[in-house]
Amino acid sequence: MPDTNRQIRLAARPTGELQPSDWEHADAPVTEPGEGQFAGVTKMISLDPAMRGWLDDRPSYVPPVGLGEVMRAGSLIEITESNHPKYAAGDHVVGAFGVQEHVVSDGKGCVKVDPDAAPLATYLGALGMPGMTAYFGLLDVGALKEGETVLVSGAAGAVGSMVGQIATVKGCRVVGIAGGPGKCALLTDELGFDVALDYRSDGFKKALRDATPDGVDVYFDNVGGDILDLALTRLAMKARVVICGAISQYNTETRHQGPSNYMALLVRRARMEGFVVFDYARRYAEAAQEIAGWIAEGKIKAQEHVVQGSIDDFPDTLQMLFRGENVGKLVLELA
Image (cartoon, rainbow, N blue to C red; front, side, top):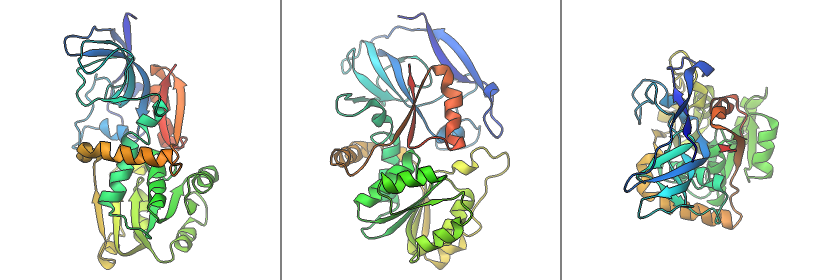
């Protein structure tokens, strides 16, 4: 067993875009598991836009990461030693283990996964938190009905790509918003979206109007800002706006931009609701079972963007999310 556990810790509260100086690359002793615990080595780390919000010292749905603490992250580990009755060496487990090479855990909040049933990265993506977020956000919060028109922003990301595919499975017309022709082609050619719009193109606003002639029944928002504001102008009567994230606002140094077109909610008798996927934790197994079935039937493609590297590559890999470089679920696989 190695003598040191490489970790990434939060060194400073970021202002605006993340900087290398916001992180501490540290070594800690490798500890042995006690009674009722197991030890494991990290195989994959989940990278998510929400991580940026966890770094700010402001009220949120979870406490901020403390200065000097190991960066919070979901990850997949392989157990190397166990004193826990429910886990054995060789098991693969997903949990909130943080950005570090070695883990000791009592198993609380962990889920054992089968590496023979699906690729390991899929347990951090389609069968992990992004899949759960898409499933409950669209079907429960969005109250999706067959035949409706769904608009989703950040459509080539981990959550957005799942939202669009689930809506297609449910018999809906799906319009995705993404950045660049390559991502848009992926949405329509491989993931089954009916229309994909490039928000960077000059004719984006007109293209959105043309793609939603009868309005939008469910808008699933992952980006906030100008795109949320524009989407509100396309709402159908009794539409539902699902607030999942606002990646366009996470690095702003000023106050977050709110929607100026909010009166469309009144005119269209629509509602806008935010949600946190953790509220559905007791139903994760239900969602995972249905999503796994859709994957097995070829109705959904698990889209993962796996970067191979070391723990020290975490800060730069995380920045890929905010540069729009990832397609699907971004995962750091430790070499």
